[in-house]
Amino acid sequence: MKRRSIGMMILLIIVTLGIYGIYWSCSTQNRLKKETGLGFDGVGHFFMMLFTFGIYAIYWQYAAGKRIHKLGGEDLAVVYLVLSFFTAAFLNPFLMQHNINKNVLR
Image 1 (tube, helix red, strand yellow):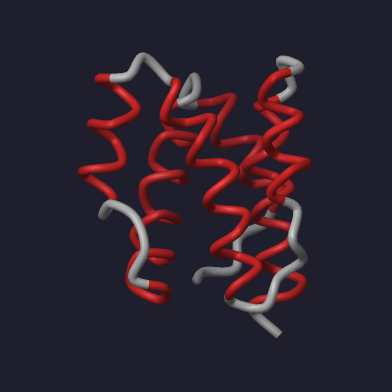
Image 2 (cartoon, one colour; image 1 turned 60 degrees about the vertical axis):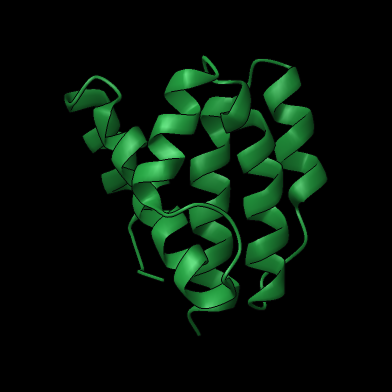
């Protein structure tokens, strides 16, 4: 996992019009796959999000929460899922990265 600044993430997502968010989710999934052995690699993750019109992204946010918990982070999977259903899914990458920075990368 890689330590990332939340402020820099926000800035990059705004400047790249959301493309950095896609890059972040694919690179985070690559690291989760490498460390837990669960899920697709980054390319498979990208194509699943594309082919399911984003529905897979909702599931992934929950599953990534479980995988982060497996690596020592807090179990916030249900929070990510609830935020996804209440159109606040844009907060999830920041919450996930904060959880990774705080609990996984000590």
